[in-house]
Length: 292
Image (cartoon, rainbow, N blue to C red; front, side):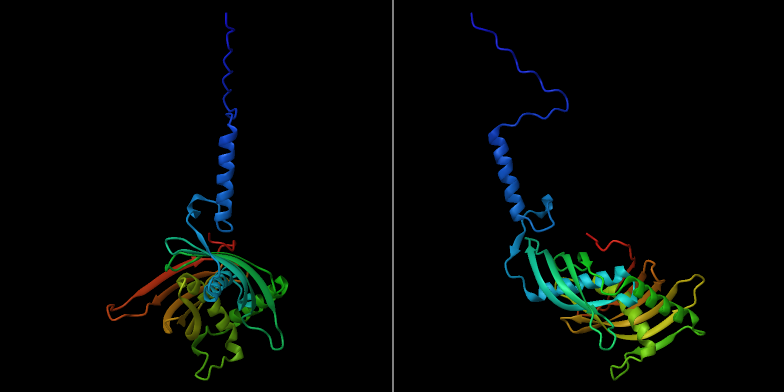
C-alpha cells in the first residue's frame, strides 16, 4: 500500500507566493537590462525607447542651459540674483522615436549685472526635457548661490523702497538708447524687465529656438493699493536662429521675497501665409525649482 502524500498547505492571505529560481533569474536580467538602457533620473515605463547620443551637439547643451537659467531666474524672483550662462561644462543627451530629447548637464553662470571689477561665478546642474519642437521645456535645476541671501534681500529691498518713493510712477521709452547705453538710474528697471521676461523666454524656448531680451521699448508703472510694484512694459525679444525681433507686452507684479506674477501677450512673427498671430500666457512663480 502506497503512502498518502500530504498536500502542501495553501498560502495564507498576504503571504508572498513562492517563485521558482528560473523565474527569479529572468526577472533579475530584465531589471538589469532596463537599468542600463534608461536615461539618468528615469525609471518609468514611459522611458522605453530612448537611446543615448554619444556626442550631443554643443548647441543642444547650450540651449538646455539657457532654458534652465530662464526658468531659474523666473522662479528665484529676484532682480539682484539674475544669472546668465558662462560656459557648459559637460552634458549627456537621450533621444526617442518622437524626436523628444532629454539633457542632463552641468554649467557655470555669472551675474547678469556684475559690479565693476567683480567676477562672480556659480555652478548649476539641470535636467531639461524638450518635447520635440514644442515650447516650454520641462526643467529641474539646482544652482549654488553666488549672491549671499542677506545681500540679495538687502539689494532687493533697496530697489523696492526706491520704486515706492517715486512721486510720479515711471513712464519710460527706449532702454537701452540708440547707442546701446543704459543710464544707471534706469538699470533697476532693465533688471526687473529681464526678470519678468525670463518667464516668457523660457515658455517660448524649444529645442531649436531660444530668446534674449534685446530692448525695453516702453515702461509704465501702475499705482497699487497693496505693497506690490506693478509694471506694464513692452520688450523686443531676439529670436535665435530666425533673427526675428518679437514684441511682447508684459505685466509684472513684484514684491521682494514673494512669488513673482507675470502675464504676457506676444506678437508672433508672420509668414506669407499668415495675416497675424499672437501668444499669451501667465504664471505665478512657485517655490520649487522644477516643473517635471
